[in-house]
Image (cartoon, rainbow, N blue to C red; front, top):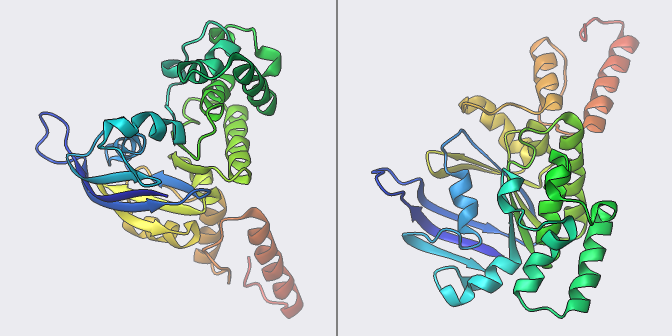
Length: 284
C-alpha cells in the first residue's frame, strides 16, 4: 500500500502549509477520487506519492519504500505512475512509439523486451494505428491515452491522475472514464484528482480535502451528502444523486444516497408503481 503518515508540506514564501498533518493509506487495486476546492492541496498530495515532492514533516512510503530516501526514487516512480493535467508536459518522443519506449529505455531494458511491451500497451489502448504518428497531431483525448501508455509500459501498481478530463469534450471524457474502468479491472490502484461529479460516483472511495486537510473519507454514497451539507465551494452532487435530492424535496419517498443510474431508476419506478396502485398523487 501507499502510506502517508502525518505529512506536512510548505511552499517557499507561504506561512500556511499546503498539506497540514495528513495521514492516509491507499491500497493496491483501490480506486480513490480526490476532490476539494481549488487550492485545497490535492495536486501537492499526489505529487508526494511518487517522490516528486518530499514532505517537510512526516513520512510517505510506497510498498514500504520511503520517498525520503533518494535511493528508492527510481523504483517508487516505476510503481507509482503520474498523469499530469496537461499531457504535453510529459510527452518527449518524436513519435508515439518512441514516447512510450522512453521509460523502459532509460531503465536499460533489452530492445526486444521494449518492442514487445510497447506494442502490447499501444494495442491495449487502441493506439497501435498511431504508433508512427507525431504526438502533436493527436487529439486531446488521444494524448491522454499516450500519457497513460508511457506509464503503463512500466507495469505500475498505482497511477495518480491530476484532472485528466480537464478541457476535454464529452467524447474525450467518456474515453477517460472507460480507461479508468479498465485500470480498475486490471487491479491497478487509481488516485484520481477530479471536479467531475460522475467521477466521484464511480470511485470505490472518496476523499475530500479542504485547507490542506482530508475532511471527509468514505464511500461516495455516504460522503457526497456530507459534501452537500458542508457546502464546500466547487463541489457538486453527481446528476443521479442531485435528481434524487430534488425529487425527495418535492415529496417523493426515495432514498437520496444512490449514485448508480440503474439503482435510481429502480427506486423511481417503484415509487411510480406504488403511487399508481394506491391511487395517490404523492409522486407528482
